[in-house]
Length: 100
Image (cartoon, rainbow, N blue to C red):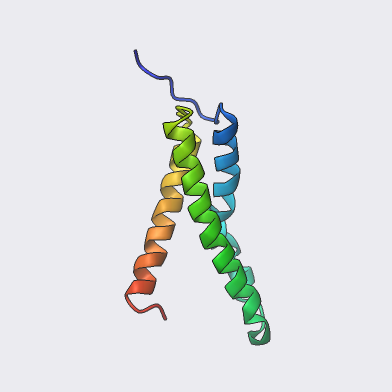
């Protein structure tokens, strides 16, 4: 029997994972705001980046639980999780190759 694919998450863990993933995916859109922070407040920018990295790991773990345990088949959740994974991978490779 074929599992149905939905657009929006149907399970509570799927909805929770989607809300955790959205700030990470939207990070490139508010990066320009973070670049306006003066040099004396760079700690704020660093804290936001670290918080988003932790949030990305937690969100991907929650997505994994939703997909494996709760059989969540939301198209939106899977696409946003793939985007988040690619952002985390790109950031990790960029930092490993020398960063700035």
